[in-house]
Amino acid sequence: MNKAIMDRMPATPDLNQERLEQLRELMPDLFTNDGALNPDELKRLIDPSSTPETERFEFRWFGKADAKRNAFTPTLATLEYDPARSVNPELAEGNAIIEGENLEVMKCLLAAYRNRIKCIYIDPPYNTGNDFVYSDTWDQERRTYWEHVGITENGIKVDTNTKVDGRFHSNWLNMMYPRLLLARQLLRDDGVIFISIDDNELHHLRKLCDEVFGPEYFVAQFTWHCRQFTDARSLRHLSTDHEYVVCYARSADFAFRGTPRDESKFLNPDDDARGPWMSRSILGLATRDQRPNLHYPIIDPSNGNIFHPPEATGWRYSKARMQKLIDSHAILFPDNTEGRPREKKFRSDLGDSFTSFPTIIEEVYTSHGTAEIRDLFGAQIFDFAKPSQLIRALCEQASSGEDIVLDFFAGSGSTGQGVWELNASDGGNRKFILVQLPEPISVQTEAYNAGYRKISDITIDRNKKVAYRFDEAAMTAKTKTRNDLLGDDGVSPSIWTSGFKVFRLAKSRFPRTDFEPNPDKTEEENLEALDAYIREKEAAFLMTFSREDILQEVLLKNGFMLDVQTEQLTGFTDNMVFRAQDSRKEATVCLDQDLKEHTIAKLKGMEGIFICLEQALNTTKKWNLRTEFGERLVAF
Image 1 (tube, rainbow, N blue to C red):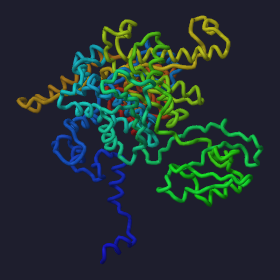
Image 2: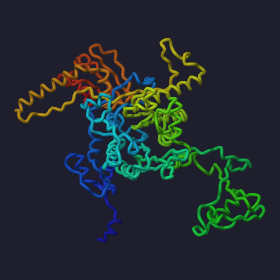
Image 3: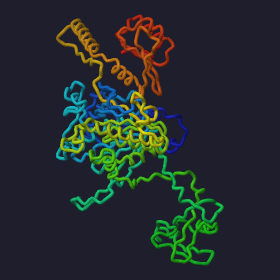
């Protein structure tokens, strides 16, 4: 049968093709740039060591396979709450600043925030040769990494990625690739990511994002006019006045909110029955050679004056449509032929109150970010901070209400300020999560002289200053002073409106189980060694046991968000039992080393999961709990 005829014949659903499409929707990184499933990537998913790197016609670089493996390798770290540096934590409502290496931090967030982030904005290193390049070779046993809460030469590469390095671009791609893979996991189905970049890595970033998100999910490449004044220092007599913001979405249906129309432009000075209007040009964009049908004379019916369009533009409309506008008195004619006719554009013809958001971003400059730093700190303690107005404008297009905004290259913390300002302007209640490496600050800087030792200290302090400014504004609105609002205990009451919690990347409180049998010993001897190893690890765990830290880690790794609320239940007398709850789930938790039968009996009817220590249970207790909670029992 003719193939063309067969192609037109009705067919049953192609289930294999549907399955491939579903797989690509879930994991686009398993497919080549032309949309075909890559068998080697599928094999690596099953066994990472099964397929060595090979050269083929696709976007590849040295170290790509290891970088991808790093993204999907579980972390042994956790996030530790830092109450001393938190600001009004009782009012945080999900706002958080996390100090630590961002790849591991995102892994820690994965259980709770997977498919929960609406908007991501990042300003990663531009790879100019002077930027810090992250090295993902750390582990929790590297003493120097943990000496400075996550920064050392083995944990974070603190030298420059010089262009004489043969892997200059590969190093940058190996840093970005796993982080973007995890960013995609964190985004909601209607989520979007914005990435600031310059010319150094723009073309590589686009190809990288095509692979991670899929080329069909490319939304826009914004050109940001970032320099307010021409750069007179240029060696080539060329002032680079722009940077870019690359935007990708999780869904092909994603659309921006749009820019509100300037309603003040619409007036009705002649009491036109069609309502308010504004005048606009009726000139086109085509020469006579290009569109001869748009080059014709028009006549003012009131006095017979004739008007011709410029040779380079022609009119906007065809002759027939133009005549209809003239007949309906929608064309405004000047008093003499030296002027230009214009159109009456009625507000009622324009539909909704929004216009398209432009891909050229104007009137917000890097100098505005510099001014913000000086205004907040009184000194230039951070160079080239992104202006919060830029981030605010992007987040306004992509988020609303209770949405979560993530920035895992937080820098000075511009994103936090942008989110707070946006909420204040539109009444939203967006939450921010900022992640910043505790990168050491050079001694010979204004920041060091001002007392800052890590970039993350600036991130936290900036948002603290912004938070207090919002509080001061709230107090001014109520015509009260700070002292008027302080209670007898010196603690401010509900007037305070802003806050955030601080967390830091830390070692897991649980011991690592990396026992390896000795091939020179018998099976019985290895089992005895394993029992001794387990007893040693349990003893070490009990010696360093901190209920508060363990509770935070257990809840995070069981999918509770950073704003989880916990309270001790008073009805339990034999054990210390807690109730944990966030906006999505709830749990009952007991971390005592001996769970009493009376406690188990009182747990009946509890909603959500129940979390306890494995060693607190014997066979009977586990049976009773399994009978009550089923799969909702979590013993560790």
